[in-house]
Figure (spheres, each protein chain N blue to C red):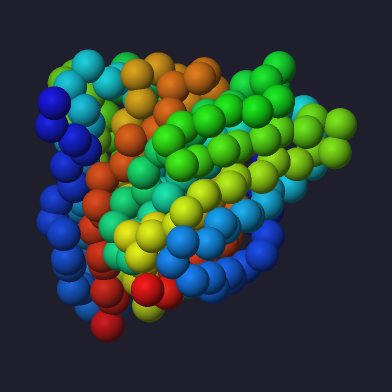
Length: 109
Length: 115
């Protein structure tokens, strides 16, 4: 089955800075999704980008997709302490939604 | 609209026992999926149910089973518990079968500890 792999594994930034995390995958996709997980809680869906889209925005989030490189990036602008969480990408082709191990983001106030 | 509800929130069991976890999806959602999350393995897909039928199954032993009822509520059962079954078990619901465009809506999980 496919798996998105997030990079870096961990990221620590100051409040107000931008945070960028990347996701790579192996085969063709229908869409790619990003989720956030606060410690000990369930995942929360952030944004879905379809294979024919190159960029998508939602509030302070910007997601790009490069299907030729089989990669996506999630940019969080003007980060806040509340953005501290793990971020996962997941790809949806013809198999169950499979998640990578995530990027652990720490935003220091 | 109420979110995905998982019960119980925490559970402590001993090796050899069995356990049943419950998940109530968002109203109108017909697909329910289960994931196991551990620090070492990350999120591992267990199974997905859609309209009371198991549509996909992950690579877990037969001790892990599930079912879905006509009201879309789902249960998963783990028999003969092992220490390695200690994990956060997450349930997620979506409007349609997972391979579509519907995002997953997760509950806050059941934290199972096996001693």
